[in-house]
Structure formats: C-alpha cells, structure tokens
Image 1 (cartoon, rainbow, N blue to C red):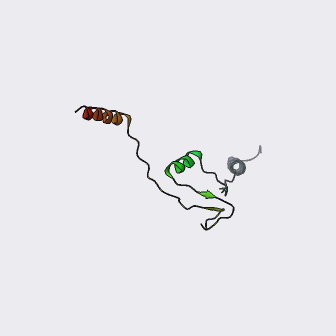
Image 2 (tube, rainbow, N blue to C red):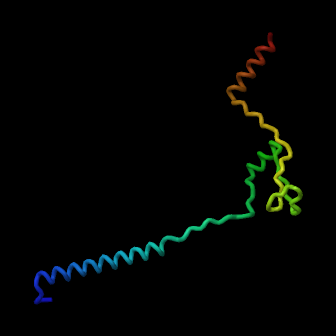
Image 3 (cartoon, rainbow, N blue to C red):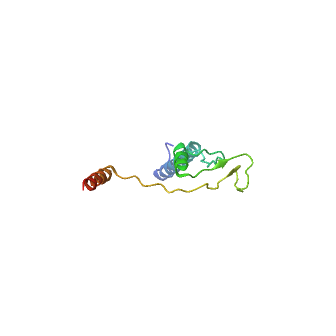
Length: 111
C-alpha cells in the first residue's frame, strides 16, 4: 500500500466504497424483510350482531330467527333472514320544535 500510485489508491478506495455500499444495502434490506410482518385478512363465520343493531331491529319489528334446522330460508349458517314485518320509525321531533308545537296546541285550545 505504501508503494501504490495515486491511480491504484483511487481504484482501491472506489472498490472499498462500493463494497461498503453493497453490504449496507444488503443489511438494510434484510432488516426490512424481517421487520415487516405479512398481513393476512381473516374472516370469521361466527359474527355477533352488535347490541345497538339488535335493539333497533327489535324496535322496528325486523328480526332474524336463529336455529339449528335452518328451515326454509335457504340461508347459510343455520339461520333464515326472513323479515317478520317492517314498520317505519317515526322521526324524532327536535326539542325546540316540540316546544313550539306544544305552545301552538295550547294557543289553539284557548280559542
């Protein structure tokens, strides 16, 4: 190394730099492959309906009958999704509107 000319020194340093870059690149790519877990989508067959939804269905008259026979509906999973009855819910009256309507009723009943 002491007797090498500037050209040989330049080429040797360039090769060392390239080798270091390749090693670092390989190291980083290996770390990234190990760090990222493979994500998989999982589907569950036994999904419970949330309580809120069940309550809304009960209020509106929509129900699903669950049974082991799976009778007549042809649905998968042992249940039939036939609707019993559909009753539209009345929209709630806003508090201020309710107050106005109450005052109008009282006003009309005095006449």
